[in-house]
Length: 159
Image 1: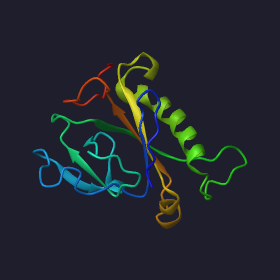
Image 2: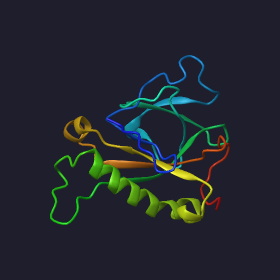
Image 3: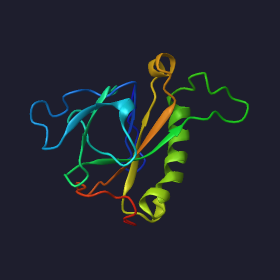
């Protein structure tokens, strides 16, 4: 399950999948549907037209095409000291972990601290079902903008 959260327009998508057919038959040129578990750092994505709680697929497209998100980090969840990382911690704990971990990885990818950047981040959390079935433990961190559509990679952009 993918959960959407806001940290100054930070969306969190948690779930064991993304929904296919975000654009139906009208996908932009170069767009491709991929399984959420096949997403790789550096890929750019369209956002579903309708918000979804659980996703199984993403629409990936070349970063030189208009897009809303760029995957900049995949981070395995680590339970706090004394915790058991094999037990689903719940959405609030995953979101708290994601907010810190994604903010920490932001500068390495974009080239500037999140606090100094004009960009924002959002993340995708594992769902309880994905945690048990897959097992899915990775948090996916995405760069996004609130004032424009991105049309190039933000890697090293220092924006």
